[in-house]
Length: 453
Image (tube, rainbow, N blue to C red):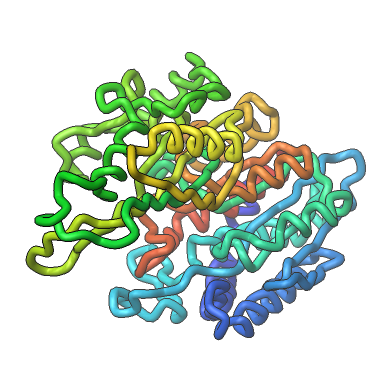
């Protein structure tokens, strides 16, 4: 790998300067006034892929922003990797909290500051330059590669699943490779082998047909806020933290000793977390550690509860309605629609006397899970070790990236999550940045992975 180290060192200024050029395009997919910028970012990437030596580089139109595809398929008998990423970025508000403008990429203290630097332009760029390096150094790739880079990840990828389904044969691969995650901390690489699924709902509880005066009616009619508090309280066992919805845990796979020991290797400091958050105690399902509760156990959380008078001072009112927003993080084999049905049954069965409820279901996404013993994941862990000197740990992450499950299902291929960000790089927040140490090591790790598959 020494010749690659020399190659990347010699080309570093040129590569960083190219990345800055791409980062300066404000490709914010959520804001319609940036539609032209999103396309410019796609066109920029298209040119970069052609320069890198990839073939069949194409902008595929969708109902939203275009999806870029490209390939290089000359390694007969070798496996095929599909590389996925996104070129769109989050909005930048609040702008006043940025130390330097979000679309004027700036280097400070070994970090590159710009919106999209770590999520996900910087990480996609690593793949482009790793492929370009191998083609320039050796004239051919040791594996076959396909790329699928979208411009709508930050708005929940509304057109990608349809594109996947329609182009499943063209995108077929032995594994999907994604760099849109983080190391555990500096120098400690991680490969996520699980992401939780999701379902959400909103509940409205109504009592009388109007708000009532508490002097004239208090104690004699149902109060929507009391009813909502009682209803929501029925969802958990307050001592054990378990969800009390009938059948909620039916499809949850038991926690294996292997997984438990893998999570223990992370040596997570719960005391430091507690102190950082200013908490007297952590809380959650009894019998599980923080990492187990947030990575491999399902949850039901209240995200918002509101109703009644909320202005300054006092208003002696009995509210006629109350509202709650609920989300669940799901694991293993849980089906989001099945969980929504079970919660709905529970809420109807526990509706207080004199109240009526309305339930509006929201998002649904399946969990993603993969066995870490899969050879493609083991080789990824080896590639990290070759460059970082530390073998990647296999983790379970509490968040949800619905599209990863879709790739795994539609293409029937393992998904390898090889990220090079760090947890404190402010993705989605002001002063987003990418540590250039991981830019350098990321290039070498990806080359190592391509060469050992």
